[in-house]
Length: 348
Image (tube, rainbow, N blue to C red; front, side):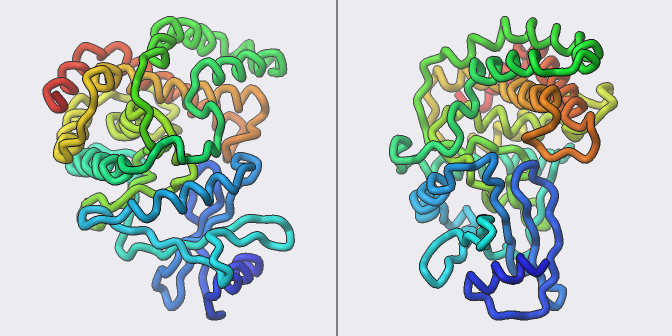
């Protein structure tokens, strides 16, 4: 980890006997916990510039958002700066790194069956939106164009079908049939005239930091911070909260939709008295099917293209992830009536 040690020096951190522990919850950037004398002190992250080529947008959005993201009920993540005052350090090789203080005794969850974790996730998402509501969405840069636009993801998917191998196409016919059918229902969601807000846009459960006693502290990984619909954050969180199985689960029988976890999440969100318009609330139920479908479509497209975007540990990693996400989306579509009832009970 000689390169990582040089990066710490570039941020003005004195040389010491540091230990670097990879943190593998992310699918895009490369992240390390930095410890000395068995005490975690920093989080060091190398930005994937193939995914985030517009690194100026990342810096601009952080500068805009960080002053607002601190309150008594929201932990402040401190981004360290270089001696020149920069949030990022670029190495001689062109790699881009950033450094944050490690929040002591913090932890993350990939998925949960714990009602308190679901409740706290809803609460902290509401706090996050309360804090960023004062920021003009138009002031933010767009680090990833058309990130949650279904038409764009469908266009990419259809282009991947031309490049995919005959073998991959022949063994995924059932998945492609599901995509065609699901689009008939999901295409209506993005056409809703919803207000644009400052959104996290990647609010899955493992992007929320918790204390050891399951109290949510804050959201992390703000690279996707940009204008969006509140429904994006709502649906994205629930794809990892209402499903007790991991997204890489290959036994589809273990994938469930938990109405109880949805209710706990919505109750936590409601604590903030975060005011949503009636049409926003109306779109929340469909967002719980839309967001996992969108992520499943992206994973499946990446599989057909040879796994260029997401990190995988085996060739069918993206295919298995797509199957899992599509199955959860299917369950959410089947339970739309129950989902709408819970949302209306908790948020209206």
